[in-house]
Length: 152
Image 1: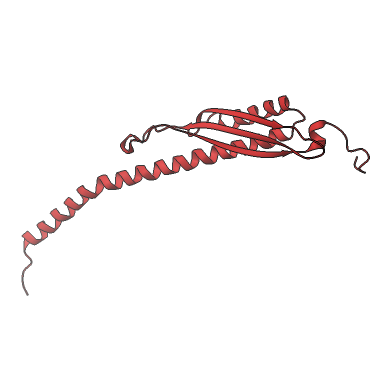
Image 2 (image 1 turned 120 degrees about the horizontal axis):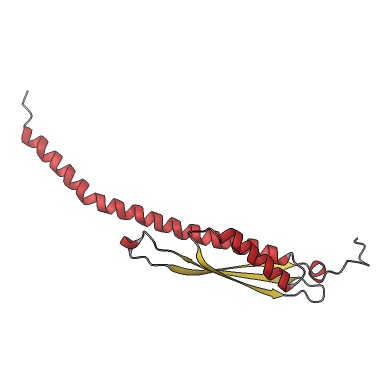
């Protein structure tokens, strides 16, 4: 049986160490990239959810000013403490119901996804916009009762 040389063992260890030294920065950049992608998805989902909830809240009101107040309240509650969707702005476009046809409450939320901690990827703050639309019930928005239609 032949004896195992100590130099072969040391050479193999050096090659593994060199491989680790080369792969470590690549693995760190991959981890940072995964975090960046996750932040982008989280910020977009949070803004989209806020826009949809704000549009629904506005559509349940009887007038544009009440819809604006409801929208601002929802946006404040949902994005007030957010760290992924900051410097947010919101806008309500109210299309009143006409002739028994439903109207539309369109909410646009614009916010910034901060690039803090993503400097190795050279990603800066990213500004994006999300829009959601909800139907406004013609009878609810006008405050009229559905008399003559067999409804209370």
